[in-house]
Length: 73
Image (tube, rainbow, N blue to C red; front, side, top):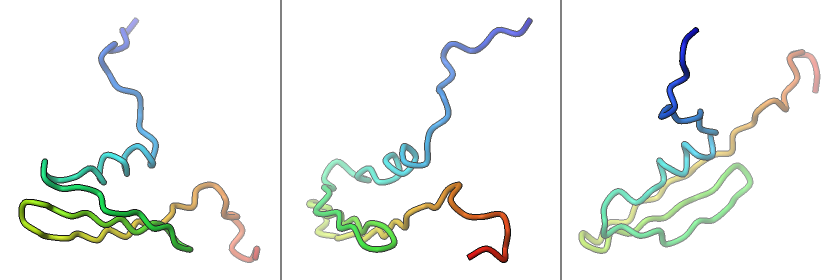
């Protein structure tokens, strides 16, 4: 019988993966704002060391809500 790896991490949800991706890229980068819109959220980051501003548009994921029947509306 195979043993389970006790140090293996459980699978991440899409929201958890997204949270990791949206972490500041440098110690001087901060989140300025997050603005929801109809199809997702806009995130704005500012790097205080370089003065750069990064805009990230994240669209909502639709999971399990769509019909498998292409003729359904």
